[in-house]
Amino acid sequence: MNRSHLIMLVLALGLTGFYVWSVKHKAEQAEQEALAKRLFSKIEQDKVDRLEVEAKEAEKAMVFERHDGRWLFGQQMLSGPQLAQLANDLGQLSHEKVIVETPKPEDLSEFGLDKPNYRLKLHVEDGTEYDLVLGSRTPDGQNFYAQVGGSGPIYMVAGAFGQTLEQDTEALREKSPMPVIPAKLRKLKLISANQTLVIEGKKPESKEDKKDEDEPEQLVDFSLVEPIKARADRQQVNDYVWALKSLTGGRFLGPEEKVKWDHPLLRVEATLDDSDRPYVMEVGPEVGVKPGMYYVRRLDPEEAMVVELGDKAAKLLHPDVHEFQQRHLVDFEVENVEKVIGKLGDYKLEAKRTSGGWKVSEPAQSDNGAEVTDLLWKIKDLRWEESLPQTAELKEPVADLEFFDKSGKSLGHVRLGAFANGSTPVDNGAKPVYNASGNPLDEWRSIVAPLYTKNETPAANPTAAATP
Image (cartoon, rainbow, N blue to C red; front, top):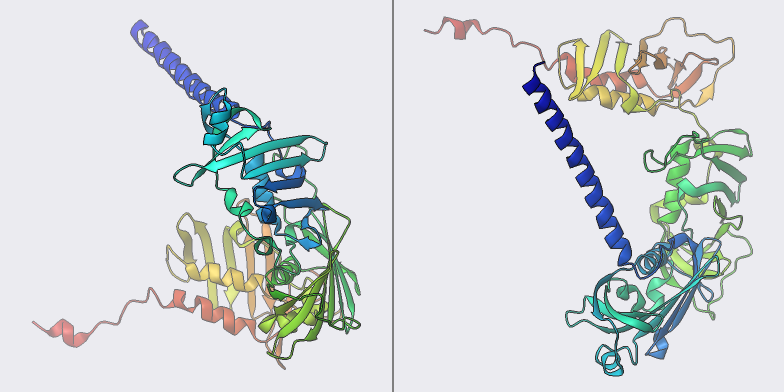
């Protein structure tokens, strides 16, 4: 390397270093400027446990309290996401600009702070209290004039959170009788007329060097503990819990409306990982005016409502341990499969994943192979109906497929026996052999059949060839 090249290299490295420093410095400076505009030190929304709203109009005064993860207004449960968002918006509130640095009485009057519209007090778990006074809205209605603690500079702050403050408390009520999500579920107890079913959830242990911002949240593993001990099907549990959460109360019952709750059709107790106090829901008698409509109540606090279960009624009211049990014959993630090899009857199949889909080398060359993905999803959904004796063997399989990851490790191996008497024996490489309902082979072959026809060359037309 001659001297001029060396000088150019040093200059390039210097410019690169300066550019990296400049970008980082600007980002840090922007962050510091944003923090300087914050009205309060950072408040974590899950640490706010009380929000007091004093209002010029007395009927708009409210006190919201958070107990065991749920927001309450008196004896009414409120929408957790809405209240959490309100607490977050207030806790991270920044001023758009300073209107008056040292206000005089006439300034307070001009901006509505002598008789404020709202005074908000945020209480945090550690006992700290934050105080914000809101005067008039700006002429465009988008912002508020505000003071911290009723003194000091007058700021202009974004007023999107005002929509929540101005709502009637009835609009803020939690409409779902069971507002829980599977990701936080620690225990689910279902008591129906037929049985009591208990499912426990546990998140896989995190790696010590795991960083929340770099890795997605771990999925919860579920286990059946009553009436049997077995692995639970995560998807079935998730679907059931989401079906519960999606229920919506058509209206809340008044205190004068009496319902017999002596023998509920279903009682649900859901304990989440952030509290030992379970959410409890009971389904009472059918309303009668419309099929699928029931009286439902949640407890602690007790609130009764009318809920339409509709086509979810059968699944929700009659939970079946057989449906919740993990019965998948192969357990893999479709996106992790890099290679598929095997046969389906007289169909041979070999495919490797590419950036655009699948490279199918058997039966024919294909650079898409969407059928392979469809086949994998169908195989992943294969479930057993009964286990055969330990001595049972699958001697002459009519189908044999194996799936591999990027390193060549086998993710699953499934063999099908001949269909007979409404079921098909399946061997997944571990004892026992199982019976699956129906005839999976025909279904799987129909999925990949286009691969065997899409590249066929049409037969030559002798008449056309002879035409001058």
